[in-house]
Length: 187
Image (cartoon, rainbow, N blue to C red):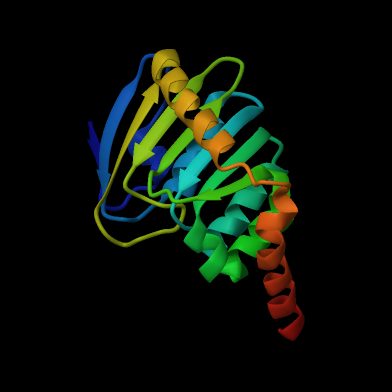
């Protein structure tokens, strides 16, 4: 059990070893993007990532793109709530630009679950926090456990398949992309 008012994700959580179960509380000083970065650092190599979240902000989009550029993400899939795409093209657009249309699905989701799997570790984080920082009390639970990972990966794969666009990703995300590029062009 860990709790922190001031420390960042890495300092609060500490090492993530096989078999660890960590439950924690924060005062909102870090968000899921910080936990994802720590999980990737602890994974010890290129990792496959799945993120389910309700929303993200521009800072988190930039951080996610930096994590991908660092080379420790082998593949990434994002499940996000439909409102992220319909109401926030200024955030969704850069994410699509950074990761490609095929990396996204939109559905009605509020679950904040992050999966990270490398050759040596498989981890799951369940939390109250989105990618973006929220200066309120947040909770998280991390399992470094093959069985927990398999359970949530099964859920993730089913949700991913159920949220598949009817024809292709362009039909779902093209309006968001068009709106984003129009906003970007006006700036």
